Length: 406
Image 1: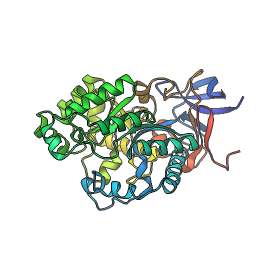
Image 2: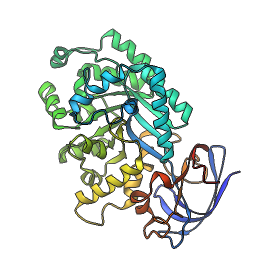
Image 3: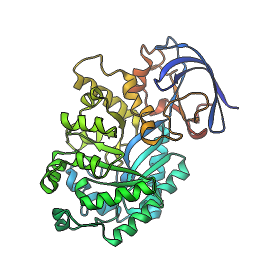
Image 4: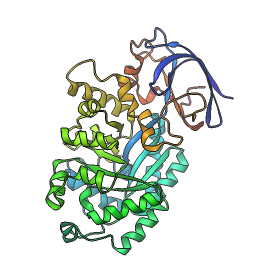
């Protein structure tokens, strides 16, 4: 039975740091935790064990195009059918695309991530390719699949009455046979009748539903012009989305609507900043009690490192809160750990305890910039780098191990 001794463990759903005399696992399960006293700071270095991280929103398909959208607007870079992303993805073969997916999922493991929720383009073909990369690397890909080509014309969307065409129904069935759920770019990409049909189909097959909302004011304005309702309320009341992504321009009423609905949201501050978009109202969302995940968004825009995203988001939230006290560092860390459970359930806990899955990351707090931390959780957010990740495990499987650590 493998174990680690004389370490620090972030324990339980509140992620409280404790001295830990022994942390043991067997196969896919944590079998032993011998806790000592709580430990907020260090006087000398230790190994620190944290839960494996979950990336709440990615587009790993375009990781083959790093920084390809530089200098392009959101529409020019990412909108179908003629955006840069879709033109370039169409040029890739499975043989040329797969190594990029494998490499970037491997980098996720290298930076402490054990799973991600991916908006995967290119229909069932795209889902199969990402599933293959997931199986190779061991990083869990929760695949939310998108139609390969838009099912409706502009005239169809403006009329907002058409149901899904038969070809789209067939494609949806093919996608859901491979993927874990359905996604589209915006609520404005399909008619209300189509959204209702997709809701019924995904509910019957127990699949997830996800959507981008309020990434820019244009999403809301377009939805209002066509239907008389904003995109967020349609996402909740018509589509019944499980995961709502972005919310960069959400106002107080929309934040209250999100919280009343009980839906999980994923924010992506670095990607929004890269595109010159407003930054998500993290402090307001937290004050309102929203269940938030943290995502790195497009592989074309960002490296898929949650370490960088945690640092950026923590400081953004403090700036928006307007004081040096809130939020507590653990609140931000939960966005990449324990907040996953209300959305996914099952064996997705996001925290460590005896009898739970052996999903954890080993950090080297013997390094000079970490070994005398005065606030351990804050240092995890702001000072840990990829070089400080010694190993990443999912269900007891070693996804990454620093060859220098023996």
